[in-house]
Image 1: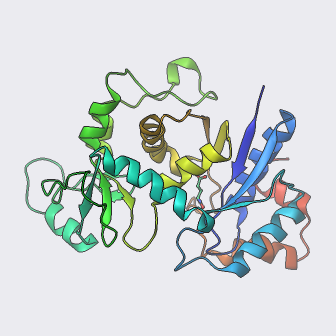
Image 2: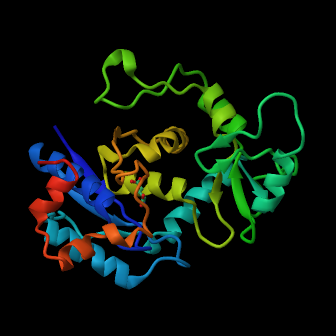
Length: 288
Ligand code: GLU
């Protein structure tokens, strides 16, 4: 079996126990399968990414006993590929420019309505579709000074009929997760594929990068579970193969809260400085 997986941290802070768990699980799976473990530096957000965090990532992973089989892929080197992919979607009339700020979206969604309050999707408040009507033909040049959103209704129309997306082989058949077009319309909506200040959004880059790295198995945390349905839609739009997705548990602190990047107290570097060994880290995250 071909097995290629990856660990894809953002160099915006120190790696903590949650990252160590994710990297170790993926690395252990790759080694057990005789496959490959790759590294990707998700430094697309140049306002928050720092070279010293990237160096710390390499250092911490090597210390944990993790080796990667190819030179790491850096998203900051991939701008052209993201632009080409956006251009292709633009040419198919699947994108539209959006000038709404977070505040505009909050105001539009907080208007009193019957029933439940505002709906949230994987990227926060569900976009109410304010700019969708200002359709610009894909024959015209793609704007570069504004965010670009995927017109989800049109994307689903292009994809045609399908029953569900199922993609977690760790789940028994009857627990297999299904996402329907309706879930995507109601729970995801018109997501941003290009932010005004970067060349592509997380969703776009992760899909293109998994494909270019020939990733067959994505192993990542349950926090990204909802995002996976977006990635499957994009793979279908681009004609890319969908890898097998495994969403692992999240490492929480004693109070049950998820560890955050700013939680420097649980940074691997802090444990190292205090004299912990890689085996201690494996024990702390429940891998021994
Ligand atoms: N860069 C993401 C993170 O730091 C992970 C992306 C992924 O695994 O798809 O959480």
